[in-house]
Length: 265
Image (cartoon, rainbow, N blue to C red; front, side, top):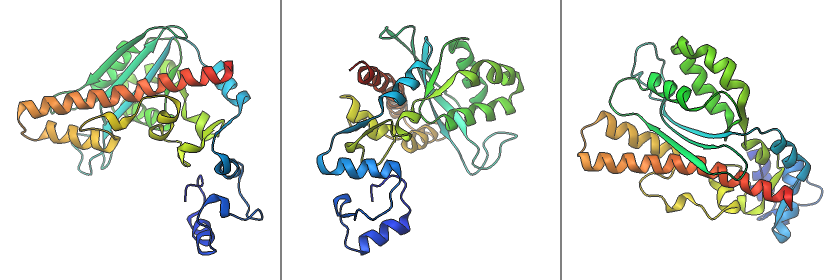
């Protein structure tokens, strides 16, 4: 059941045929390239590395690097004029900026407060801090691109800035793991940053309190923002939100550091 994107029907067939682990899967079973890597590693563990693929990704980055991550809600009932059901509302971002390889990190945290539409302040804060050069590194670019594009559509004053300055600079760290240029058997078939981070660093989301996942961040922010809660509890949750989002971008930093080590070695 940990085979990467194997059809559920095929997984069930293998299970019903008596396969309980990847080791039990017959040699005659057709696997794609990624699944074949998983089966090879299942015997002895370890890591698969395509150094050329990792190197190509790293060479395509330009400093300063802006490590970026968002948090959003997507309520069924639109909260603001002009919105649709389930449309994403960004309320938070974390940004680590590194001027040179191995250089010091500058951290910028944005977490909106109040019940007004957070999108204009969110986009302005990004515009104020992303500069006009260097790569913008994210994990799963479809999400960040989609959110910013929706915001630029809702607030056209940001459209030219997004299209011409931001969009061409975005690089997706997820590509390295989705392509299996780097795959550790401990990822258990997942390319999620929650699984990648612990195998590439000593950081872990398990050490966080109150907010450890994106859906928890969405729920908690909406709860303390649009409901009456004691100020002490509200501040506790807001602190937890900032720690969680900060870890997302710090995770990108640590993973990239590890990839540089892989190519160097």
